[in-house]
Length: 166
Image (tube, rainbow, N blue to C red; front, side, top):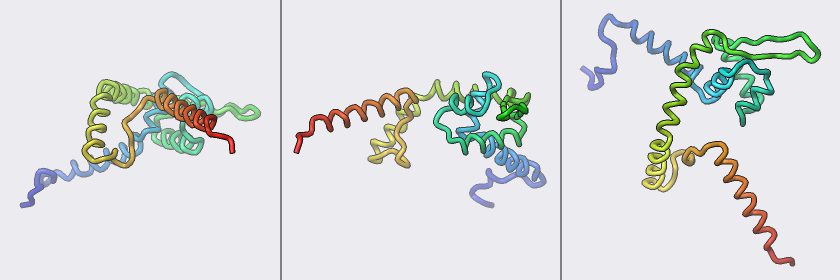
């Protein structure tokens, strides 16, 4: 017997392995950062591509296009083209996509509830190991990140202004 026998299915129960593989494949398609953000954003109603891109924030055109194609392929999003010049394309959640909002909102709520604990664990890890894992810093809200960046640019500008003229 293997020391990891608890990880194997019981004899005659190959259905579980196939089910787990299927679940893994589906999760790999729908559980990434951009998919969650796009679905959450479209939960407020249909949007055109550029409006969706602005609402999601910091997503490249290529990544948004790819994410929308994957969501459409998997039945979460419908794409409607209005034959105008230029054509207008609108994206909205399908019935399946709206059902997916329930776990998305649940996950978002869990993150909001536990963000302080996650940040504390990451900070403790960084203190123990001298740096954050993979160079990642603790998660900061987007507004905080932009404030930090603005403050950094201001300090750099002030330093440039205080340099003596040659």
